[in-house]
Length: 307
Image (cartoon, rainbow, N blue to C red):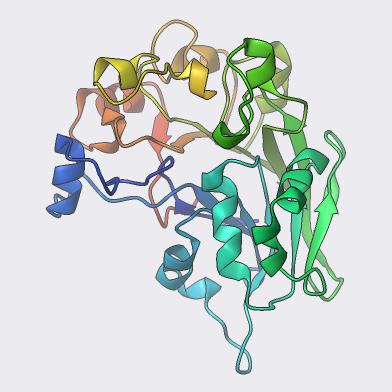
């Protein structure tokens, strides 16, 4: 299995287009310790030639152009992208699908709930169903990812429920039950090949015993690194919501990601989906040093995470 991070940032990217915060200014100025990052997505391949994406970020076109292995190689029009797996219906997970509208055959793998969201929004009709197949994936049941020609990829993928929330634009109220949505609204992806396991979980509101059991023994885990502190957005004057209200557990603090993973045996632990407010984006930050001491890595665009 080959795996490459296409984008490591949360919604808005880094630097965010309207942010004048110090970290974003450093990234715009070309500071080598504040590397820009596009919005979160991962590319996977069983043969190094044909690829599947986890999530289609709004930056997908830019990500494709930045990675030659995703460039067309045959005839006038072609693509090595065989399919896209979706972890939810958030804008930063599905907006990039609109970049794939030029009648290129591929398969979208997602929970039934997420496919219903796509079906209900007529703009996604530009993905002609005669070319773009939509496959509902039941939670907890592995499926073999298949190339467009029907051949097997050697990759088995499983969608599984994680604590989260409905997409922002689908919120109907402000009570915990309404925000949590239904099973399938927020999922993680486990990919297996040759006895190796990679887990991709860009959004998680809290750790559970069941999730710990699934994580244990994984070769690579790419996990929600949105905020360093739960009240980060409020404290910095960037918004009125805590991380948990947005469906993300904090990296630090009691019950945070660092704390939750201390008793979970994992090969590589990598944070992804990192908000521009999070100081771990800066190579010279105290928070980055603390992460390294705890055995964590911070994802960056182009990072190879082959299990």
